[in-house]
Every structure is written in C-alpha cells, then in structure tokens.
Image: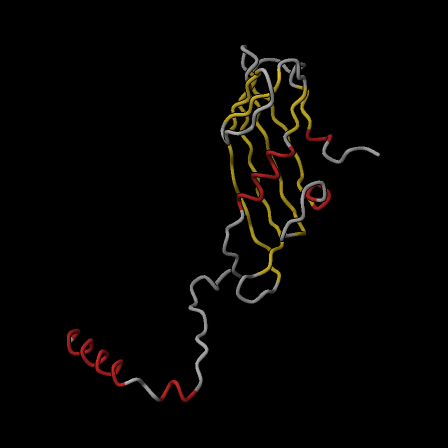
Length: 170
C-alpha cells in the first residue's frame, strides 16, 4: 500500500536553481497520517514556493487556505472555521537532521528528497486559534447564570459602592 504522505516528497536534487511551485490538497486522508486532532472535515489548499539556491540551500514559502470543522467552545456545536496562514522556512544541508528551529530546517548531507507533509501539518494546527467560537459569538458576552432571587437582592455593601460610583460619574 502506498504511503499517503509520499506525494508531499520533493526530489530537490533534480531541481534546477531557482523557484519551483507545488500545490497540494490537505484533507482528512492527509490528517489520518498524524496524531488524533480535535477537528475534522479538512478542506485546505496548500501552496509551496521552493527557491533552490546555488549553494544547495533552499527557501520554502508555505501557504494554506481553507476550512476545518471544529467544535464551538461555548456551544459545543460543530462549525466550519476558515483558516489562512503562511510560513517561511530555510532548508540547509548539515551533518544530521535538525528541526529544533521553527525557521530553519537542517537535513543530512546526501539526502535527495524533502517531505513537506510535517511542515504543512504544523502550519495547519498552529493556524487554529485556541478559542474557537461560532462567527458572531465573539462580540456577545457569555450569559450570566443567576437566579431571580439574586437579581432582586443586592448585598448592602455593593449597593453603597454602586451609589458611590453613580455619584462620581454624574
């Protein structure tokens, strides 16, 4: 069976010096190759511009745009969240693999192929906000859960503070 991430491999040794463009579709089949996520129904277009330099280093400009289905943090109902993100990565040849730096990737000397699937996965996951709300819910204040008795009875200290606050604003 063919590895679903093999299509994200770029044989850079055979590429001429200069810019090369690649396009990919990131979908649920792509995401199944990675750890479980808290989103699904991925429909993302991915663009890659690879600029190969004469010294065998490369610059990658990755872009993604599309949508993923997430759960609203407030209502727990699914909705499609639009995402768009970019990332610039410098790739150099070195003694051993090193991806500790977000902006630089070092691949071992003698490598002839670079698989960009992990870079796209990280870009997609990092493009999602920590707080996920239905469009339009961002502006609304969360509902306060108070009983009717709490609404009518106010602690006398708070009443005095409110009166003081009102007198200063007038």
